[in-house]
Structure formats: structure tokens, C-alpha cells
Amino acid sequence: MTDPYKTLGVSKSSTQDEIKKAYRNLVKKHHPDLNPGNKQAEAKFKEISHAYELIGTPENRLKFDRGETDQQQHEAQAEQQRYWEEALRGDKRKRKSTFYNTQQNGGRYSHSFGEEFVGEDFFEDLFRKAGHKQTRPTKGTDTLYQMNVTLAESVLGAEKVITLPNGKNISVKIPQGISSGTKLRFKGLGESGADDYPPGDAFIEIIVTPMKAFKRVGNDIETEINISFIEAILGAEISVPTLYGPVMMKIPAGVNNGSRLRIRGKGVQSSSGSGSQIVEIKIIMPKIISPELHTEVRSWHGRFDYNPRSSTPRNEKSEKQYNV
Image (cartoon, rainbow, N blue to C red):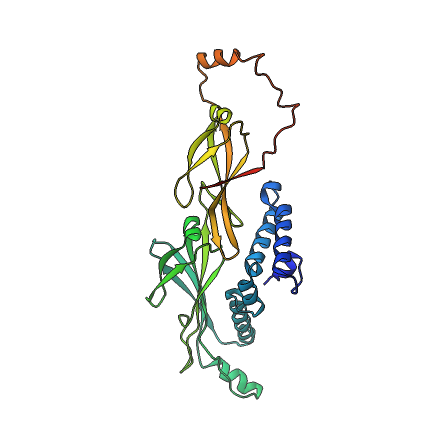
């Protein structure tokens, strides 16, 4: 697991304000909009966002410092499992893999892999040969499943049902603002333990599927909206789709193509902060220019001329804020 303190370039003694400042500086440097086509910058941006989710608030930071996040606990359990697998590689007994198909309520499938061993108890034989005290694992094997959710479900939260290999249905509550790759832990729903030992845990990894009209960047949701050149000149008030439903937004007169308008409170609401929806303006010319329009525009010549190639362009990345 990557150390979020190192990712953000801060020390463990840094204040929350110092962590927030470092996060903002890194986001400005590696934001995908400022580095178009740069896959390394995009990967770095995702790493920075994940690091801030871990230590961006006092509650999450304390949980991380104590090693109590789901990812830390899962990695510790995975490390323990790797220890046993290393020991098992030296054994010549046959073993076989089992493949679990689990169907979700949407008809999609996810999977997990476990190992089933044939023959007498390998652990007893291994430690008997080594002359050590007989030992058994303290609980059953953990299992990992995947569940696909839409971007809207990850932002707004949802509740879905997944069927485990043993036929048991469990209700999975998708927390509001969850990120792709997050694992939810269900204690005691893994493989059964030997003898009287407790069963392992089940982990559900959330995979967020993208949506055509919306993209998540940190806690913001980005989208595009088309307007006519007349609306760009005169300004307008139009309906804009959001994940929370359509809202009315004012288009300022003289807006440029590529300008970005911010609608506060319509992004991701998570423990790391409240996001906005960023609306990028696309000015679309008419598909067919009628003779009347052509004549009218020609009449403007000499009265409203300007040279966009020599005048200082406006900052197309500036963001105006609207409370909706």
C-alpha cells in the first residue's frame, strides 16, 4: 500500500491545513485537463486523490494511522495468506483451484478464486516434519468478489444484492461517494474454518463503470453542454443535466468556447470534501446556414469586426460559480 504521506509530500506531524495545501498544489500540477494525453499525469492524479481520501480528514487520518482501513486490514490478511501459500509450494501433494461465479441482481457476474487441498492435513504433516508444535490457521480463508456499479450509484449511493457461492444472498450498501477499487468487508462470510475455528471474511471490491455524459475528477463531476452562437453572444438560461437531476444554469453573455462553469454542490459528497459539477461550454454552429442568416451576418461586417487571433483571449479554463 502506497504511503499517502509520501504521495502528498508531507510528514506525519503535518497539520490538516498543510495536508490540504499540499493536495491542492499537486492537483493543480497533475490535473488531466492541464496535461491532455499524459497518462503518467493522469495516474499521478488518481494516486494523489486516493492519498487525500485516506488522510484528508482527521477521522480518516486517525483510522489510517491506526491501520484500521479496509485496505490495510485486507493487505495484512493477504500477507498472512501468502505466508501459508509459500509453505504450500514445498509440498508435493496435489491441489486444485476452485472458481466461484456470483450473480448480482442485475444479471452480471463477478468471481473469486480459492484453493482446495486434497489428501491429509498438510499443515499437520509440515510441522510434524519440522519438529515444531502442531499449528492450524485460526480462521477460514477470506474471499474476494467484484461488484460493478454505475458512476451515478457510486456518487449517490445505492443498495444491491450479491449471491455468494453457497447460495446466500447478502445486501451490499454502496456508500455515497465511494471510489472504484474500494473493498467492503463482510465479517464471517468467507470460507468456513476448520473444526471450531471461525469462518473468514468476504470482501466486495467495487468497480465503478463510466458514464458517457459524466466523468469524475477527484470530487468533481465534469460534463459538456452545447449552446448556439446566439446564446453565447446574448447569454441564456438553460437546463443542465446532473447526477442529481436537471438544474437551470445561467450562461453569461459573451461566453467563450471551452469556458468552464461551476455548479456548486452537484459533485461527489464524501468525507474528503464536497465537490461541484464542472460544465464545459461547447459553442455549436448551425448545420445549415440559411441565406437570411448569411445576409444578416454580412451586414455586420465593418460594424462589429474584431480579430480573435490578435486580441488577448479570455482564460478558457476560468470557472464561474453558480449556486443551484
